[in-house]
Amino acid sequence: MPLALLALTLSAFAIGTTEFVIVGLLPTMASDLAVSLPSAGLLVSLYALGVAIGAPVLTALTGRWNRKSVLLTLMGLFVFGNLIAWKAPSYETLVFARILTGLAHGVFFSIGSTIATSLVSKDKEASAIAIMFTGLTVALVTGVPLGTWIGQELGWRATFLIVSILGLIALIGSAILVPSNLKKASPTKVSEQLKVLTQPRLLLVYAMTAVGYGGTFVAFTYLAPILENVSGFAPSSIGLIMLVYGVSVAVGNIWGGKLADKIGPVKALQIIFTVLALVLLVFTFTAGNQIGAVLTVLVWGAFAFGNVPGLQVYVVQLAEKYTPNAVDVASGLNIAAFNIGIAFGSIVGGAIVEDMELMDTSWVGALIVGFALILTRISGFLDSRDQKQKA
Image (cartoon, rainbow, N blue to C red; front, side, top):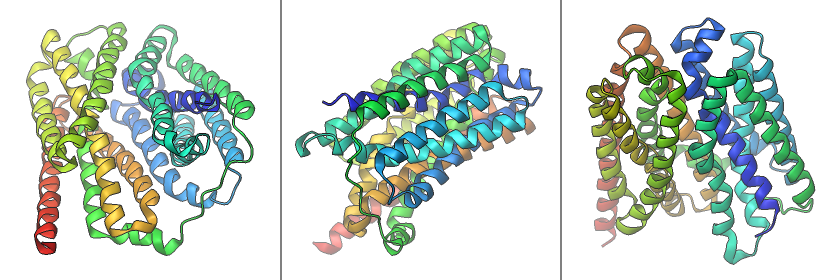
């Protein structure tokens, strides 16, 4: 595998860290910026909205640009956004910085896969994409807990400075290692993009993605204040619990992919959404006990991200059937749907924290995931009906 892939993987690591590290630092940031917890939670929502807008819109606008130039511009924007966050004099400036880095994130993962595959031979394309995306997984396992720990020990601003330095190293690595003559993807026609947005079966999966993923983030956005205020953990312990969660996520992601391969994405998603809803419901009762809270968080991590491979595979399968000329666009829009889910979940969580109790985020999240289960069953029913009609 070429060294240029290492630069892409480091970029993915830095980007993944900056998206999720804020979850562990929410109480600290809210206190330091003198804003409420729901206002601090908006820093998660607005970043995710930046990703959701950036992925389809900016990718389309930069479709004819040189791929390496786009990559370097994005990483420059990412570094700049995190430096603004490091020095942000006010909450409003931090909001601007989060939206800016979110836009860079969205386009990076849209074009990163294309760049990764163009660096290797045809038979190694899947491995190249997998290597790049390990950056995201490693970010959840090590970057987020380390960033949380640094933020607790040296202040949350230090975390953004270190992420900026990581982004700068990735930018320099890309500038040196990524070749300039990368193949440009042929821009997708607007009519084909619109077809993806108007295909009912694909819209149903996007709803499954947004609702199923978003349900988790109703409670996950406020995990640090729950662990501090309800479970009674010291702020210094949060980084360690995030490490436990991250390891569980990595295992669950692999397991979720294997399950989707073995029994099909719809059946796998039904199992994952069912267990995820139950775990979130159980957390409402176990959060008050430290051992119970950690054990529930461990199981939660395994199922919270276990739905990602199944949802992505399912979108590609349906796109190949209904919009064969826009499979990449359909896949990219599902990435946007994940981030719309994050934004939706954290906004709902913020409203609950403001008007109800902190622990109400958990059972409300369970109800939302339950709705994703209903949507999955409907989609599975439609698949069966289509097969019977063909037969």
